[in-house]
Image (cartoon, rainbow, N blue to C red; front, side, top):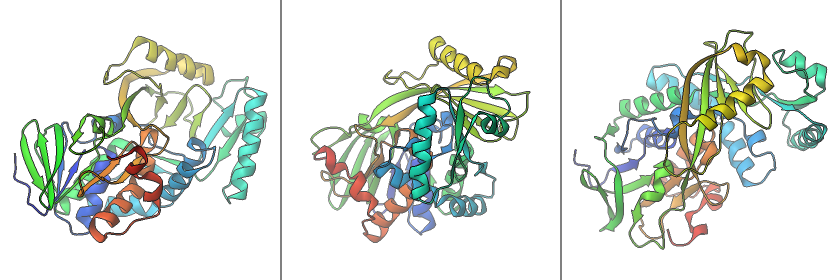
Length: 374
């Protein structure tokens, strides 16, 4: 394994969060190495729908809505600069989202949500049946209406991660040979990381290993990072009917249309440990849900079934901040379904803390200390 300099920053994890952090740190002039057990972006990222929807995902308000809305506001500039730095395109659109009501209770809830978002200055349109069908002609005939939030959008998570890794490498970051991290401990003024391929010393370590962060022993901590895998299965369909105009979902599934004419259908939520297999039950659940929402889906082509393990934390918030057990260890994990959405903000606050010693207000919400001595 390549030797990492004592003053280097070692980023553990090359999914969208780790890649975004590595790119931000190297763009600011830091010496960065990236370590992952697998090919960059091959974990939860490759099965992500890439939805940028803080006002729907965190519709109940609270800190997650605050973090998501703030990160969404960074995306236009984030993607524009990234495409320049990496030299490759990233699929990114702000075409809005349509949440479909299948019963009166859902429509009443949408009306409340629209009012709450209006007070925040967010455009949200409550649609009756005719307006919802005009916005999306493919919908089943039994819908009651919908909620259109025009500022939300989508980004292609796999191409985003590839671009982030490429931009980081162009700025000087080094991608190390694959290895799984087993233990992290303080050593002098820095950090020692024990892996399946040997031991690495670094000045600072960022643990962004997603669902696998909870498998890493942090010496001196009360327990391992409280991150657990939550399996999500998705379908990738070839779509021959009129393409959907935007992300669309109801209570059973979400639909992500791509300009290449394909459609992502997600996603299951399963407590299955580290089992990364697609199942007949999960695939059937998604098939039934999409065909119920879009009757023409019976004529679609199944291109692939995907699966990813989301990194869940005990509460809805990610775990971002300094370790109290290993002084130069920074956590950046536990993003659950919001890793893609929160990538720009996470990269910014981590780089500010590591390079400038500043504590962004977001870190008060995401501190590992809320789970004890980690």
